[in-house]
Image 1 (spheres, rainbow, N blue to C red):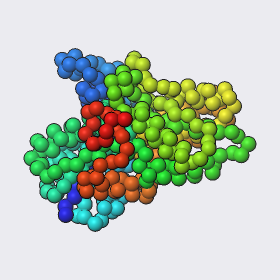
Image 2 (cartoon, helix red, strand yellow):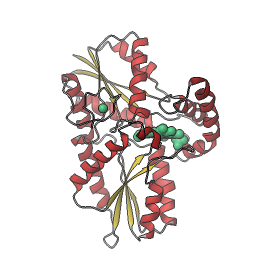
Image 3 (spheres, helix red, strand yellow):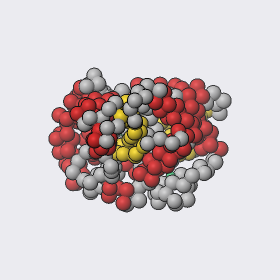
Image 4 (cartoon, protein in one colour):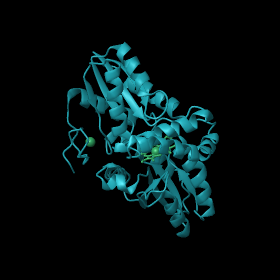
Length: 334
Ligand SMILES: C=CC1=C(C)c2cc3[nH]c(cc4nc(cc5[nH]c(cc1n2)c(C)c5CCC(=O)O)C(CCC(=O)O)=C4C)c(C)c3C=C
Ligand SMILES: [Fe+2]
Ligand SMILES: [Fe+2]
């Protein structure tokens, strides 16, 4: 059987010149800014132009571009190898920069698969990320004349391979901890405006599912869940990662930051966590600051993704609850 798997992520600029157009795409998404098009599009251009210099500075610290596509390519190759029982090809579709869904859909159409699995690289479902990617993919697949059945993976906040890969990386980082310091794990996820969560988005609830599963595997540790990467004037869910770093510093603790919603390295890990928050930790009196790497192409994580593809192909319904009214994963509401 010819099997196509399409991996989705947000994307990132591939050059300094791409920063503003990338941001314009992001803020033009009606699932990110829910205003009518005649307001949203000019607003998106305005916000993107205003944020451009700050964002360009962020990407300048990692060579002027996001590594998200090369990172995803490594994951795609590993997943292709893990699904060797079929003639499998893994494709990549980024939501806000290249390669877009239209390009991926053309490649998938040329491969002419018997079945397609749409697999977001977001363990936790959000309308702003997974939902947006899946809708865009369906539009692009239709435009490319794809008629093969498409099965969607919604989310996998406590998928055992994901949790085991993450726990393994946490344990390796804990091995670097200094015995004289008392550490707190900061389970840090990308934040979301409060109003998105209030309207029923299950993302925060699913981040908590990930945290519970991870802590269940690690055993008794001092930890807190927190949220990073806030942009814009709206109120976002908290506590914020920077506030938790300051609190740990005031309490004389060391900090181990664990990215629980990113599965590859990009600006939010390499710049925000490794540069900006490491500096904040030093200024806040944090006794030691360590950061756990993302699961990337960890074999347990890739094995977990392969399992999700097999379940989707077999039509197996996931066991956990999603809670999102608009999600079609088949999970009953929480
Ligand atoms: C992990 C899940 C993510 C959620 C939920 C999310 C929501 C969300 N993001 C913004 C604004 C920005 N996000 C940016 C980058 C970015 N965000 C995620 C993930 C989630 N976003 C990823 C994987 C990335 C890619 C980073 C990279 O490739 O380098 C950016 C650009 C960077 C910056 O300017 O800081 C913005 C802006 C909003 C508004 C939002 C929910 C409403
Ligand atoms: Fe984001
Ligand atoms: Fe769901």
